Image 1 (cartoon, rainbow, N blue to C red):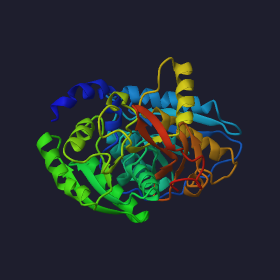
Image 2 (image 1 turned 180 degrees about the horizontal axis):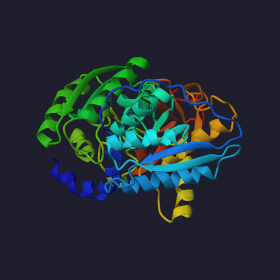
Image 3 (image 1 turned 60 degrees about the vertical axis):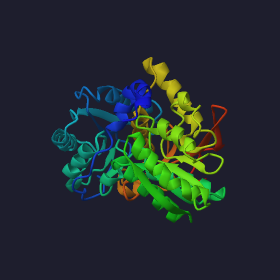
Length: 388
């Protein structure tokens, strides 16, 4: 591992634990996506599936439930009967409690957290046409009656490639970690390039050690020197080896003056890394800053602490269901209702669910100048803005 990154990893370990819960592989695809009929004017019964008794995920579960209840206070023209079920972080338990929730009258399921558990829950209730809004960001489990609410690499890649291409940066090199997340990130960048008229001229993987990273940088550097690559995408995270990549890259000839650095993950969360040479002027995405600050302030006032990682997804799920229920349509919880083109206003900005079970979120493009985050292109307030 990268020895120089150990202190940073320890500092962020608690928050990273929540994010790490999402990267699980898909099982069998769910079957249906209709959704039960809803009686206008009657409360909508929503089952919230959380790993409450899983000690490693309990803080995330509490944050998700707290945020969901915060969203309940915003509902206008709709009433939600929210019932919480404990999955214990287990796939089999998730399937069992999903079925029990539907048997008890749930018209839609919010959660679970883990990708495999979400898949199991969706399969269990697919034959009854009940849709599942999972907190996962794993697009490999999405589809049928299963939707993912978590922020995806596809979102960030498309936003960044679109912005960079408009700025004249469209020949891209990718440095990605040799793990599942890195490979998914690489694939997302390649797909985004194809959609936006850009091209990936090289994609080099590396293991989390300096020798492997130096070798990958060495294979990319000649492409930048020869003018074949004018953009450099990184898939790494602060919890992995991002700080080392941002240090070694410029040291080994990948100067930010010669190539536009871009990050697929949230770089704004670690101001202690803003002095690294690869950060200055780099592009990365972040949620709508004003919306996020409003959510954090409300959560702090209600619960006496800052919201933990992923809590905003609990808010988003209830906000979407409430907005649909307020329309008074009998098919509000169907695939047609859930995937309405105008989307929903969530804790961190606008978002919408797509027919393939993935999502799109309004993201800002940001950079770092003089160790301060600067917004280059604000997050769109609707789905006719940038990146859509």
